[in-house]
Image 1 (cartoon, rainbow, N blue to C red):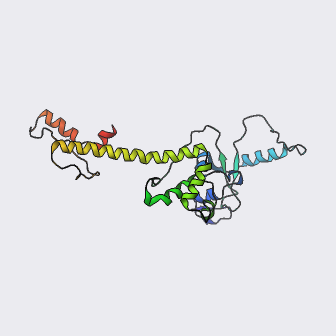
Image 2 (cartoon, rainbow, N blue to C red):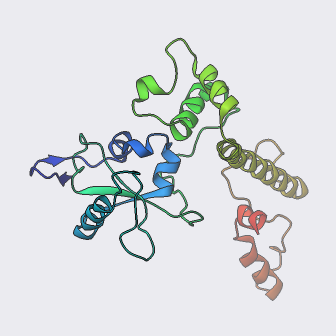
Length: 239
């Protein structure tokens, strides 16, 4: 919760911040908006700088003359007037080659190969990479399916956006590969011990190393092996 300039409470929301971003950021998608800009107060210094810039405008050529030497301020973009904090907050555009990275909180993006979540996958990617203000009208045409809208977007998307889509899917490719290798490792261990037939192993279960010298009571070798056997096979595979 926060209080606007009129003293009224409102719910703070990143969705509201994005949909009511300034016009000069209208072509920014969700990723670009939150990675390439940051919110800051509209302070007195910024207002004075804007006033000085306005006074330095040449009326004849309409060219802005810098009123003083020094490093120029980063681009500042105010919210639309319908934003609860439009007169108190603004977004500042980072300079090029900054090192800000996105941090996605919550469930990861769905897999593109999952037939049961195809529409959800297409919707998620379009929401992330296609500029919008209204989710109901801006992501696709009413006559389009989500798959058609996704294909149309990819046909004209920037190489950077296509790279992001590929990297999202790469996570699932690595995850599937890790599960497959972990299953192979575990079933190989169990097959060697002869305790449980391969195929009856649950992937969520950790398996101790089979064939250990447990028949040797209270020996140094037995103690070392017992300590090592407590480590999860997932940790060994990762190492």
